[in-house]
Length: 90
Image (tube, rainbow, N blue to C red; front, side):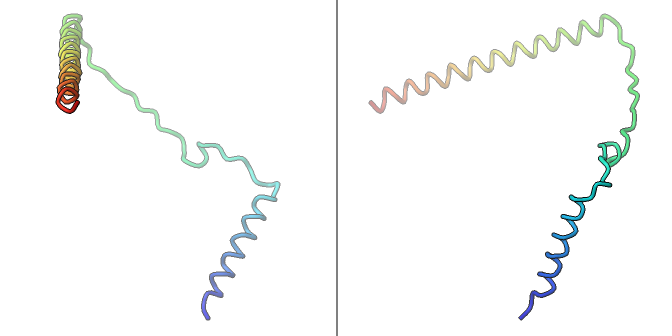
């Protein structure tokens, strides 16, 4: 009948864990102790002109408006489809 080594290992692990929990010498480890200190990354951004910033904002605004229109169109088409299906099956 096998499994004797497994049972002994489980018993040893349990005893060791209890001993660790009872020990008062256990120090509180911080995140830095476990994972190490985070490296500081310096980012260098390109200098942009006011004109480029305005262009980018304008493009973003146009893209946002297009997305809004697509969303409204999808909602309206969905509502129309459900209404037609309701009329067909009632």
